[in-house]
Structures are given as structure tokens and as C-alpha cells.
Image (tube, rainbow, N blue to C red; front, side):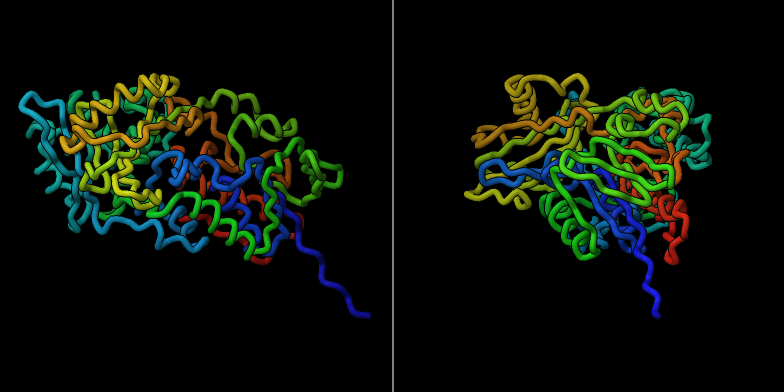
Length: 462
């Protein structure tokens, strides 16, 4: 009599954002029978696309850096690396329109010299800071390089307080530290934990010369995070169910789990919850983590995106950042959107937008169209084919001082249950990189918790 091979362990991943997709792929690659549940009609979480007439619109502009090794793994895994290219070398045009003498363009650039000399030439040529301010930046950067972002004490300090301690002027904060920090942390220095700021600047600017080179999708985000991700999941054998919101999660006495949706009950040996913190809190069984209500204390931070379609080309660069203006970052999305009939489609990414997130479209139009004309004269007199906004009120968790102690790790107190999401304790702010890292960590934790350890354990993402 011949024996039969044991059935593979069953895993259910709840949530189809980047964290959930990553967990599902990692678990399937390790040989588990995986079901992925997503309540929306698409994958991708808060990095997605939608149709508006003939346009394919990203809900917001998302970028990544060369140091985002986990997200780069994700792109490779779904076959999308060539669709989200990186700059050959960091080069950020920065236009200051707040000068009495008139607008002036500067650039933040790097060279191939060793860290920290790779930024010295670019800083020396940066016209938006004085010589004394540039010298102060150098001293602060050296001090920042000596910090350990994992030091819990840094989480109680605001980035602004630390910058003031190291003599950074308000102009330096505006023209450099907040220029980068607001876009990566979704918070100004006043409202950002020094631990997260140190992680961003130390990793992005002080780890290796090319770490801060910028990459972004040359196609709609939906092609990466939904279409290609679904193709990769299918190829890995993952059963993906859309419009399938989990309504309950229970654990039996034998240690197995049951996930219920409105239409079915799914049994599992291990479960990964890859949902936002409030949805996670609603599903967590008692005793899963210490002080579960602390998840409700992790606040959200909004991002506003302003979309303008002109009847002619008004911007010659793929993107730029602005000073002296409410405009933060502007990206040319003409080609990825499929815009036809001439013209140009620009997307403005406005982080830390708590004061603007609920303003009427008419008020935002009156605010931003004149600013765009002030930033580039070619927009003056150009016709507006379309103007609309997208609002992500819960775009990221708020990286305020003290948030670190609220973020749980992937492992819970209940065997077979792991947590994922950019809001968990990844050490990163709420980025695509953090989401993918959390998905890998949760999958690793889920595998380690199985009663019969699988023969293909995962490795932590670099």
C-alpha cells in the first residue's frame, strides 16, 4: 500500500494591497495553498488607477528610490521592473518662485563619489541656500549619520526639534529637509518622528551614492499592482477573490482558523491580516496583541492630488519640486494616462494636506491654476481641458512622535495569525517599500508558526 503525500498547508491572506499581494506570493512560493481576499473590485490598495473618460488616472503619484529593495523585488516578481525605471542618477529640479528677484531654478544632484561626498557638489551648487546654511546642512548630515533609527528614544523627538538643535534655519528646513521629508513622510518636520526621519534620510541619502535615485511608473499603477500582480498570483496558484470582504475571523480549539466573507467560510492553517489598522482592529480576536485598542490611536494622514489637463504642452521636464508656492511636486503623466489629441496632463502631489483635503474643487482650482502659471509661464493663456482632484484621506499613517510604540510587529499572540501593512512595525514610514517589507515579514512569521515547518523558509527582505 502506497502512502499519499500530505496536503499543503492552507493560508488565507486578507487584503489585496501591496502587503497582502506580497504575503500571498511569498506563501505560494513556499508551497502553501493560498487564498487572497480583497473587498474592492481590484488589487493594489491605495496605489491604483481608474478610468476618467479616455484617461487612465493614477489616484496619486507614487515614486520609489533605488534603496527600496523590497519594492524592487516586488516589481521583478510581477514582471514589471522595466515599467517603472529608475533615474540613472539623482537629479531633482527645484523651482523657487518666492524670491523677490523672481523665479530661480536649482537642482539637487549626486555624483558617483563615496558617501557623503556624492552630495557635496550638488549641495555646493544648490542656489536656494546660503553658504552658511549649506555648511550647517553638512554638520547636521554628519550628526544624522551617527544616529540609530531603531533607537526608541528618537521616536519621542520631533524632526523639527532635532533640526533646530543642529542649527538648521527655517529656510534650510523649507528648501531641503521638508522638501524631501514631506514627500516621503507625509508630514512636515514639526509633525514627524525623528526616528522615521532618520531612517529616511540615513537610508536614502547616506547609505550609498545611488540610494536616492528616483523611480516611478511609466504606465498606470493599475497595470503594475492589479493586472500584472493578478497574473503573477494566478501563475503562483493563488486563488484570488475580489469583492470578498472578510467579516469575521475565528480560531478553533485545534488551532485552525476560519475566515468568513458574506458568501463563504474558508478554513486555514495560517492567516495574514493585511488590512489598514482600523479594519485589522475590527477583525482581531481577543488576545491577538497587547492593548489592541492602541491600533485605533495610530492616526491617518491625507494626501491631495490635483490633476490638470492642458490643451498644449506647458512643462518640458518629467517632474519638478517647488518652493515659495503651495504647489509641492508636479509630474507629467501625459503618456501613461493615454491622453490623445495633443495637450499635457500634469499631476500635483500634495502631501500633509490636512488643511486642504476637504476643500471644494472650485476653491482648489482657484488656488492652483494661478500657481501653475506662476511656476511656468507657458501655462499662461493655455486652455484647461480638464481639472479634477483625488483625495486620499487615509493615505498613510501619521508619522508623529510616539507613533513607533503603537505599531505592532507581524507576530501576534495567537499561533497562525500574522499582521501586515505599511502601518506595522517595519521601521519605515508608510511607503510602498514599507508595505512590501511588511508582507514578507508576515509571510515569514506565518510559515514559522505552522506546526510542521515548511522546507522552504523565507528570508527577510533586504
